[in-house]
Length: 213
Image (cartoon, rainbow, N blue to C red; front, side):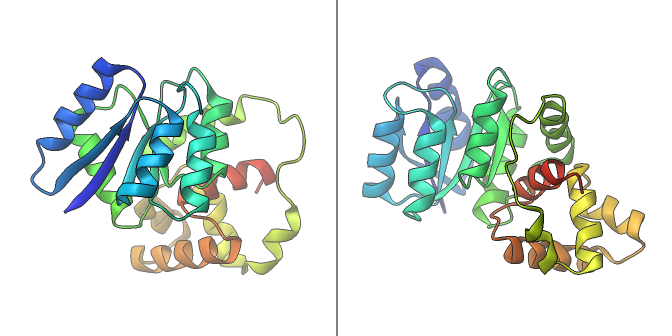
């Protein structure tokens, strides 16, 4: 059973999310929060497997709440966004969120995303990942956000895989482009995430774009 905490300040949206989650036999909603501070407090007390976190909330925004939840290893975080606040979204990913969803995601994709992140894969739909990356790439980088030296730990093949992640490619698409087995791609992704101390392929994609890999 996947234990989920829903953090969303709009009561109607929160109720809808809870209704969808409770429709799945393998998911249990263990708590609801209308602001970031409450979300962190409930995560500490309930220790859910996953927090479904809205970006824009009162008292404590979703980025700061995500940072606290991840830093204390309370749960994995799946961020909700409307793309109105891209900088906040990327802040949440850098804070350690395992992935993100658009608020207009349909019920089936929401449930699958929760299951995927709960498995520790942090894999969000490639099409959504590409949109996120495109939004990020369209904005000028105000200051360096990553040190190119971190790439020195990667093998040539791992750098190639990282570059593909930067384009939002799925494992199957990377396998096709680099002419390798999908299982091998998965191994390379896992290793490069470990070497770069990242929690998800979405974070890797952001890093790849920041470094121009």
